Length: 115
Image (cartoon, rainbow, N blue to C red; front, side):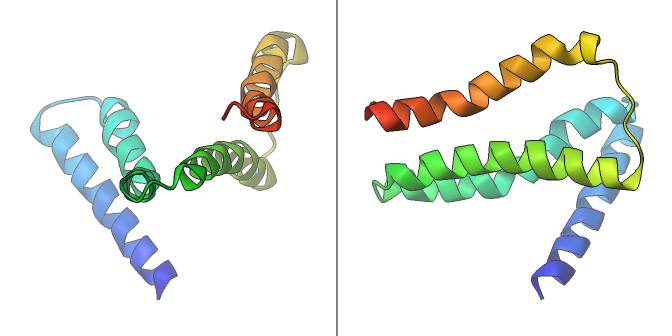
């Protein structure tokens, strides 16, 4: 049931985004970056907002960290499984190390008891 709802929700989001882009004469990439990005982040926003209202900060931290790790691992991993990703290691070296640092930094704060 969830997969069916997810499919139809995604179809509505894409169709609506295309309509907005055409109606306001905007490039589809702009609409995709804003509306679709917001639409995919909405479940995390709702869960985190509800957790804050119930004073459950651990759920908020877990939601943020889990979403970040899932986006890095699943999105990049599934994309790489569908089509090869070619890149120059020299070009992404800084970005890769920065991404790993930012992803692991909250774990350091949790270990130190500051988060």
